[in-house]
Structures are given as structure tokens and as C-alpha cells.
Image (cartoon, one colour):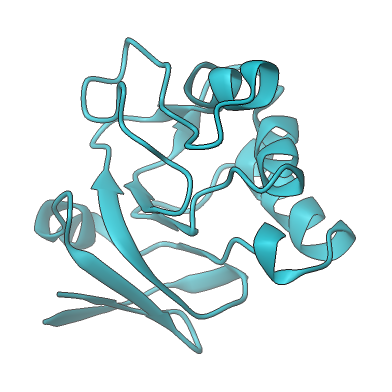
Length: 149
């Protein structure tokens, strides 16, 4: 097991299975099926992200460097949370971008209930993204501590 320290963007403690992207996450392309067509597993629809394409995102520990894409990114994350189709958590190796940050913070502040929570930790570093692999067990503890088994 290895532990990494990051900055808490949205608080919470959770344990989930990792899915890892080494490229940026296009939120709209990735969550479109979940939001538009009712895919409760939030199967990634972004064909330009070979790390995540056709993998389930809902309930997973989504490990990534940053998000990319259109200005709808924050709204997409907020809506995924509101619909209960969000990852269990998002773990950024880099500082979170402003669009994803806005969606994550709005979801944390505006939505209530355990089924919409999505803890987010950023600034975990490149070593984190190099170390974590699909299927590893991720545990977020208080204070931005992320344990990878």
C-alpha cells in the first residue's frame, strides 16, 4: 500500500476501485450516454480516450491528470452527481481545472444525500498517476490522504 497527499476540493471518505486515465477527461463525451440516454453505469463514451473508452465510471475512483473539453464540463459533472451517475471520487494528479472545479463544488454545495456525494482530491502528483492501475483499491481518508492498494 502507498499513500499520497493532495488538496481536498470536495470532502468525503470513500473506498472504490480505480479506473485510470493518463490523458485528459472530456467530461461531455465521457458522460453523454449517462446523462442523455440513461446509462446508469456511466459507460465512458469518449472514443478519443483509449484508457477509459467503454469502461464504467459510476461508482469508480476516477484517477486522471485533468479534464479537457468544452465549457459544459462543470455542468456535466454536476448533472452526473444529481442523477447518481458520478464516479465514487475523482483524483487529480494535477491541480483541478476551473471548469471541473466549478461543477464539483456546486454539486457538493447544492446537492444533499449520500447518493450524490463525490469526494475530489487534486494535486496528488505525477507519481500517483504512474503508480495507480485499473482495479486497484483506493481509499480516501480525511485531510486529502489517498491510499492505493
